[in-house]
Image 1 (tube, helix red, strand yellow):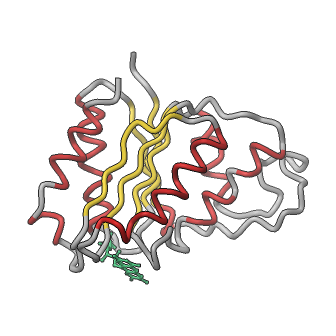
Image 2 (cartoon, rainbow, N blue to C red):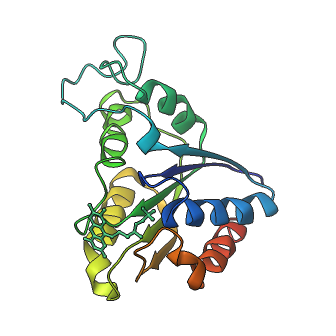
Amino acid sequence: MSKNILVLSGSPRKGGNTDKLADAFTAGAERAGHSVVKFRTADKNIKGCIDCKTCFSKGTACSVPDDFAELAPLLEQADVLVLATPLYWYSFPAQLKPAIDKLYSFFVGKRPLKIKECVLLVSGGDKEERKFEGIVKSYQLIAEFLGWQDSGTLIVPGLHDKDDVLKTDGLSRAEALGRGIA
Ligand SMILES: Cc1cc2nc3c(=O)[nH]c(=O)nc-3n(C[C@H](O)[C@H](O)[C@H](O)COP(=O)(O)O)c2cc1C
């Protein structure tokens, strides 16, 4: 079955390791017959959730006017959500976190998303996999809360310069993960 896959790519570094992982995943998923939309959160102006609880009361998912108005319809169409992210201080970067926070609007507004699956792609500088435990746990708890199944977590450590991922098997693993979405 062909699925709508939304890839949120969270690095400010355009064409860097995270974007490359996102693109490799996309190539695999498209090869498997899925439709993929990539949304670079760092290129958008999405502010943090202010917990006003007025979601969906002013014609948009979030009442604070920003680029989440562009993202919300994409989230509503998606079957699978992919978080492609660099590791910043053991967590999600500021360029991605507000988009994640505003998933809250669908919960508060009682408008459940049809997303059933999620995927995590992480690029980071550290070589030790345990340094990624924080972001992986956050992702798992988000998925559990929203009732999403984890369809794959890929961590690519040891990446510092923009193209470092090219020296690893990260892109082929990301491609395989995309191709494996059933
Ligand atoms: C502000 C900042 C914080 C970072 N924090 C971490 C960190 O906590 N752990 C780590 O392993 N790498 C950290 N890094 C390194 C990036 O995660 C790594 O270089 C990543 O590959 C960058 O992805 P990109 O090429 O898509 O921008 C940090 C980089 C920046 C700019």
